[in-house]
Length: 246
Length: 222
Ligand code: HEM
Ligand code: SF4
Ligand code: FES
Image (tube, rainbow over all chains, first blue to last red):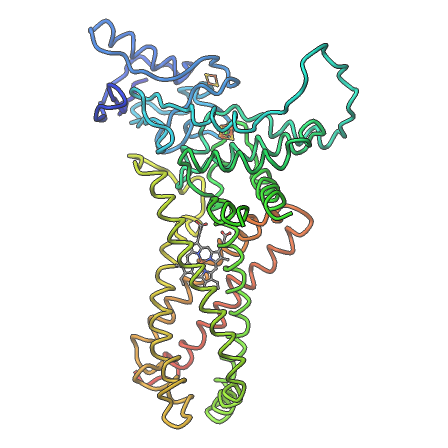
């Protein structure tokens, strides 16, 4: 099949970008979206042009490195997948496909489709962890965790930090990401010691990085490749209220 | 006091103010609608009701000041939030299929709120002003149904109908959103909140909108 791409090209963080259109031929429906881009990039290199820069690493939906805004949807039109898990069978012959980088003040474009997501790292270092003494590895089951709590904590821990929640949010809010971190650790015994401080510090860090506030539109939950639920944002709000007022 | 400023300055704190003031305004809607129902009883009943209210003026004044403060907080805070949110998201996508992932009502809270604000300004500068200062010797019913600022004026009737529909839109998202903001939407009260939400976004705005429809479109002279 043949597709018509309209891709955001931007030489570096300081340059003005613009859309460039490409026609990609001989696309098969078994190709992943990235394989289609790889094919186009090979052709660009052969022509002596700059290939399109995009982020990717594992290409199997677990690392959180990839992320493109495709035809108006974060990670493309399907639910519950990352961009690297999107295949060309989701498109039709002759389709026009608009490919844009994540847009958010806190995620500046570095080049083409790559954005700088170190704001997430700074949020994590503000409290997205537990402090433990190093030493021998403790036995796995010394701290009992009820199964339902473990499952819910795991649902939150599934967040891969891709930033789709921010990308799709009309306010560029990072609430779903922060909620996943706070919820994950608030549910587990290991997270109790720093529980209050974690909620306060992560939200303060999120605000400082220039992410917006939450309007509860729920777009993040729909676009999240790990289907992190708004239930976790509710818990984050509770954690914040308790930590602030009590 | 340190924690207080930190709370007020944080995005979640601002949302909690939004939700608290929003729900307080919702409770005021019930009282206001109750009063409006006296209109259906005719001029005498309505005028007597308003006179009765006037006899507890000091109490009314206190409630009015509280209400004004709640409105002020809700509006200024929404402005503060909205400006911050714009700043966080300055570059728009070329194509953005927001319809696929969020409701219309949730995306236009600022717009519906702003039109409700215009309505509020008109409402206060006409009905409230006339009722307080210029009531032609207790002719309250005539003010409401008349053709200067009342429902015999098609512009007034139109504005009231539009504003009440938009109030329904605002609360379609806002009511349940407030409970999400408090962190209590997804628990054993979820179903109950959903049921009460229908009262606030549908039944109450419907009660309000029937008044300009009845006194303006059906009984009115235009
Ligand atoms: C007078 C003009 C008004 C303006 C400008 C306004 C503006 C807004 C805005 C922008 C939001 C969304 C904030 C956000 O989440 O980003 C909001 C939320 C809300 N508003 Fe209003 N509003 C107004 C009047 C009202 C009235 C009359 C009521 C109720 C009777 C109301 C009830 C609510 C509720 C319950 C919320 C949800 C709070 C939350 O999401 O947690 N608002 N308002
Ligand atoms: S919450 Fe979901 S969308 Fe947001 S960063 Fe984590 S995995 Fe990505
Ligand atoms: S490249 Fe690792 S999740 Fe897509």
